[in-house]
Length: 378
Image (cartoon, rainbow, N blue to C red; front, side):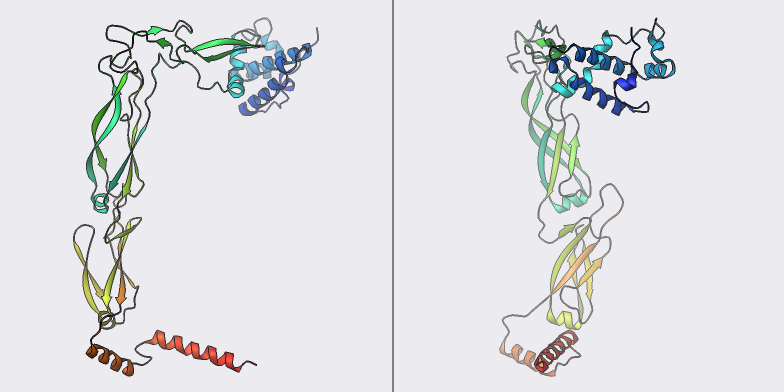
């Protein structure tokens, strides 16, 4: 009898290969030498068994350590606790490749028909003031709850679900396919492992019914537009006594008549008269905390200038920090002037010089230079 081939050579990997590399090499070779892909080729079946045997040893940390030290002798005459062979290890070796090849992950039994309920979404609009101060809101939502008549079992009162005769309660059945025996979801019970012969009339065997439910939602200070609040276990009830899903509250902020929000900062625009901008003055603005703040305008203030009021913005969520408030002044041009007002402004214009309007004077000086330069060319 010829000597056994090195397991590492069989899987075409180095001795330093990690678990991920080992699995990848095994999957590639197993698919290549699968007997169903090589019908009538006896050598491929032998090669296939060698690949499985090598992987069965090397994927196990203890067996791999023994093999690295003693080689094949570690599994001869019971030295390694029995050879790798084609016993229970054969099925476990290929369980991961079954999932890759046939998409069977997650197809196993579902614990007697108990299925987790779906997550729910609830959209809530709040005001900027509510986001500033926080609030406790009451909401009413239609949601599936556990049926009281059957206590969530789905079976009529006085009866119980019965074990599925097709799968024996496992939720899956085995099916021979070529060289393999595959496991698939039981078509009789849809993987639940149980059958309801006499369903509950209140819930039609689902174990849950729809009801209006009132919930209390705590909205913390500083929430922003798009904030998501999770209420664990407040979603749909699970099927036949399964765990409930979660409820997610999605917050949106209504448009404010005065403030615009930028993170923790607030912004507002305040119109002021041309006289106030020129001579200086002051005015009061409302703040988000329902107070007032005074803004002093120095003489010669230009339109769009911003004034910062520290600490009068929004609270930062889950912290003690607070943003600022920014007031942008907009110099308003007077309209519907009387004849007297027009005369006074015209007189003011005559008396004005570059000293009163330095930006305008500088601009028009540049314009004159520009056209003078263009006129001298050519």
